[in-house]
Amino acid sequence: MGVTRFYKFQPVYERSAEDLAKANKHLDALVKSYAIFSGRKSFNDPFDSKIDIVYPTPQQVLTLLQRPNIDARTRTIMDSWVSNEAFTPDGVRFLSDCERTLNETIDSYPMYCVSSHNTCTLLWSHYASSHTGFCIELEFAAEQPTQVHYQQHIASIALLDCLKFSFKLDANTDLGERIHDALLVKLRCWSYEGEYRWIAGNAMGRVPKGQRSIEIKYDPQQVRAVIFGCRMSPRVKTYIVKTLQELRFTTEFQQAIEVKDCIEVVPFDEHTHL
Picture (spheres, rainbow, N blue to C red):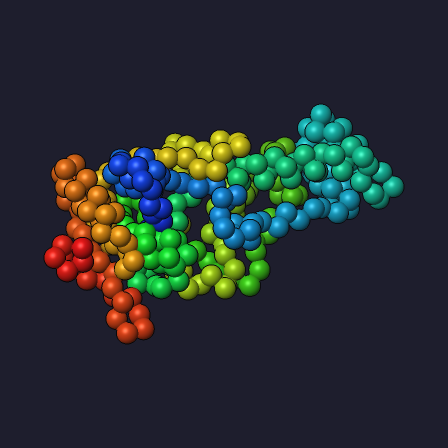
């Protein structure tokens, strides 16, 4: 796959601090070349990456018990879950624990969200502190972010499939792929974002329980350009230009401007845009 460029919108909150990066984590991430990968619990939309966990019926569990590849210990455990065609307290407790464990696992997946757009007014308004922030243009030459699917309903996963996986009853399960795909689902009302999502692999780390994100380093050469919001203060622009030039980054600087009823991105000019 060829090189692809995506855009990450970032807010900036002006502080009186001399070092703006110390007061703004997104500026700090820019100058120190790390990405903030978020867990799904930190998303502003409660339905983003939410997965409907579908409970099995007692009959489905009884049918699963008929499989010849269930060992004696597993059969004894599962046999205690159903009595008189209903779940026992042990069965209800186990399924509830299984659902909690699954959700905690999914919560730990780190995700980095980018867009295929850099002039969308709503993106600038929602994610770049009402046009006072900035947008970075990122270049991906190897592993690529995956396009988000916009649907009418959130994704679903059957808890029965998780049981099969936990007890090693299905060697060909695609549960991991289905969880990955479910984390790429958003409701259709967000389709204007043109979002792509980079879901970190195990080697890159996981979001620790109780935390909302992790920091992952990247090559500063991936940042091809920094686009300043049309309302960004000259102080912040000057800080970014000076700091990145001192670090000898090859980053280009661009400016978002208002033209009639839309946003346009043009080359940054200190005489015009400061």
